[in-house]
Length: 116
Length: 110
Image (tube, rainbow over all chains, first blue to last red; front, side, top):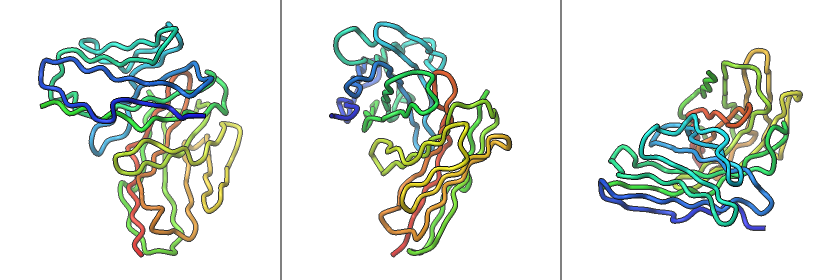
């Protein structure tokens, strides 16, 4: 059973370009979370999605950032017109069910985005 | 708003020592608390999960405690080894997301 798969591992973009980060949850998991980690800081929640639904995007910047989790295929975190401040590690996590007190989150290895 | 704090930010110990990492949170209405390990440039590995109704969990040389009323958790590592060197993150879960502390960077010297 493969874990949470994220690609690419490293992504380099110039200012103004678009970045697309992909996340395939663990098999059987229908809940996906995106987190951002800046150097020397903890992980910051961005968005929580179920298949075809955005459940909570309270951590997403209001502009340039969007996320989706289609019925088929991976979840995508899209950053338009990237700026240097977007440089960070972006982690995806998945879990089988919401709301159960023993539901663990399983994390991918992350995508390191570098904006030149 | 839930705030999660980890103390100390960094810790260096000689091999073989027992050590305690601390985590505090401001809102006690949580589903669970989870301790993770993160190696440089890598993702997070779950170590222990404590449900809100539990007081502690143990796995090998690791023991995590939870005092929900005071908003505190500790991660105890016995007989530390150089391979334990990593950043340790605690996270509390309520509703849709987990809130993370900034982590404790642990170095165990041979």
